[in-house]
Image (tube, rainbow, N blue to C red; front, top):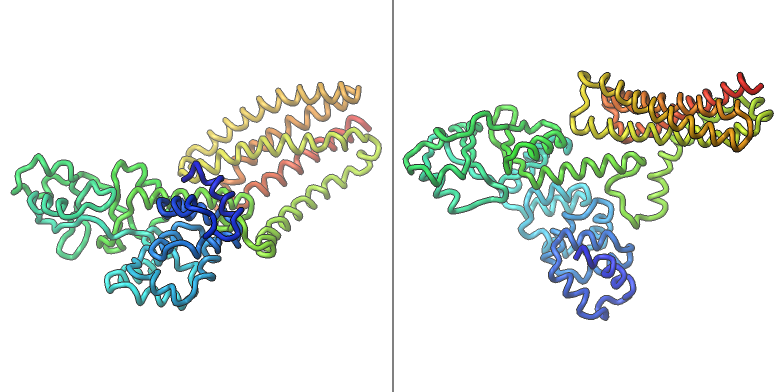
Length: 446
């Protein structure tokens, strides 16, 4: 479906009445999974999205809602008739409701909770004891577990009866339910049935605390070489697990959130959200940028007399700002990624700084010469070429310095570098670039 998605979007949009669109759409919908249908619905304007939603079978709707982002999901939630929810909530599990809870009004959350069996209600209640940032909120409960005194025969019997996704180990617990060991399933088939499972348990098997940060845990699971890792509470009682699918979802959500946050936006924003809502969400970010722009303008105003007498400086100012901004954003992106992957630490920050300063110095020297020669050829004044060359060099080096320290300092202050790092960096490079350029112009040209 991913290959035909653009054509399918066009076909849905072009038919005001989907019942007259022929068998094409119906056939694709019948074969598509929930992720594909979620992508299609998110790609449609509100009117067509609602029209297609009404044609979908009830047994698919809940899974599709779970696969969608928050904002486009809310549009469909509001359009669903109250009496339909009882059908949609049949068989709902705790993990499903946890995913949907932020998009559902309180009365629907209560209705879904009432539709769950006793075990799922308990899972839901326990998960809500942890905030969304902690991995305990997102654990799954489909894992293989046996008592600590179990033998190979019990392990073979268990895996023949059930095999949850990404299961390559059996967890062993003591009488109190505390996690003790993990046994690799692959070893069981070659062992006599009477051998205790604890004798073939893995050494130093990784264990996750329920209060650990979700993004950190996601990385640990993906790098662990195991299909899933056990999650324990503060008393080391086994409460669930995180498998590689859940870890991948947590990681993808984190990096999408980082990407959108760099522009001051929410990762759940609907492509076709109402104009007023989108404008309101983005207005704050524009206001922050406006304040930083006024700050840079204030420094430019200090050199008003210079600009009045040497018009060439005003023409070349955007070049200085642009080169510094680009150089800084390259370093900033590299450091933010390193912080996210826990690769940037106090131990290697100074080494990184020296490396980036060398890169900035080399690029600054090369492009200072190029831009200086272009300015000299353009305006016929070697001093103008010298002024912009020196300013370019200084600004690119300053951008490298800021690109390293701005995200590191923000991270220490518990402020997301992806959210505000680019704004601060742009302000720094603009101010340094303009002061260096106009200051040198005042000294050398007047």
